[in-house]
Amino acid sequence: MSLLNKLFSPTHIVALQKITQAVTGLGTALMVAHFMSPEEQGYFYTLGSLLSGYIILDLGFSSYLLQKSAQLSNGLIFDRQGEISPVGVQRDQFIAFSAWVFKWYRNAGVLALLILGPIGAYVLAQNGSNQTHTEWFWPWVLVVVAIAISMPSIGLFALMEGAGSIREVYLLRIAHYMIGALLAWWLIFSKLSLYAQAMPIIATAAVCYGWYFWKYRTRWNSKTISNKHAGTVGILPQIKYTTSIWLANYIFLNAPIILSFVSGDLISTGQLGLSIVIANVGGAIAMSRVTAHMPEIIRQISSGEYKSPSRIFQSSLAQFGVLYASGGIVLVSAAFLFDSFKIFSRLLDPVELSLLLLAFLFFHTSNSCSLYLRALGYSRFQIYSLIAAIAIVPLSLFSRDLNDLDIILSMCVSNLPIAVISILALRQSTRSLNPE
Image (cartoon, rainbow, N blue to C red; front, side, top):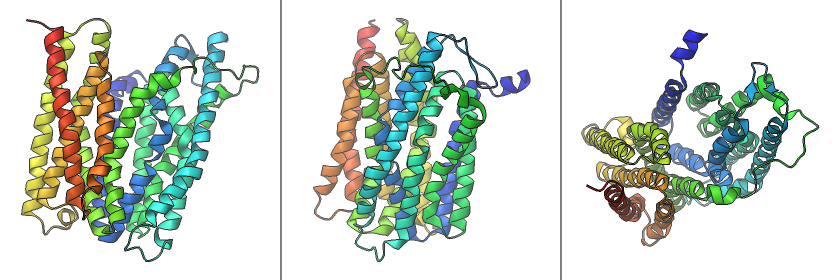
């Protein structure tokens, strides 16, 4: 067991989870391009953008849960049978808080049925080339029901990761990524492609609840604990900045696809959706060094050290720029040289693809800078990212003939100023905190 724990340290398992997520995402993109028609591809990515609306219902609360769970579980012992000790006030507070979290996400699942379901159905019915709603109706029903059922799993994973079960939680995430991807690939291969969007959600719920009821169900079994949990007062002020990041990410990644779909061209929607997925996966891989260093950067800043975090962050950000630019050049060159290949014919044309990658460069740069500046106490930059993401919609609609190029240009125009401002603020903070 000690050898297994050494091989699967929390750091290694987090990295493995990121790799699994990227590989399964790219695998699904390749399956979509190979087995779906261009019109099905448009519906597929529109369904994916709409189902991501669950992020709005979470509001970044799961990020807060990591910190709160770590605080409430400090000093508690979780044995292999799922029991919590020692018995006392702190244990009662943790269990009561956990029960409240479960109910909160259960209610969020009900809201997904009542709000997300009708909104998604309305959007899907707006495409001018749609001949019958039966092609997307039942897949969308399955997606919404799956979201409603799986919402509590978000809270359960966040609670247990915060309580120190990092290795377990990330192994389970790897498992549900793989199971969900395999199920989705099987449905795509079986010509039931639109149902594939629900498979990762169903896999998440199955893995999480199976794990919970097998091992940790006793954490919610106490009948003697007060239903008034500790520490939920003042949650919204603490998560408002996280919420702004989540909303900015959702709008930036998904509003362009929905706008393209509503404009009526399913083939263009599919090309934009697949290109966004590849650009986002590539950006996440290139950003991995920045992401990996952020906890240590925040820890050093909290302890009053500024020079070393500044050096680490700027070095990591520069490496991100080099990796992302190199990958982008390779992708665009391949799309230009091998445009007759099926996978590349399902992407945007090289000019639009180049502009999209540039928009993602601006977005990732401003996001990473805002996280670093937030650690230094400058919180407004996360709000700027949200404003830039929201601006994509009116800038796109400003065009007379809404098309993918208009949408991509709006993504670039809205995020370029924020990226420039964030970099200038980063340089200013470096000079003020590390004077020569």
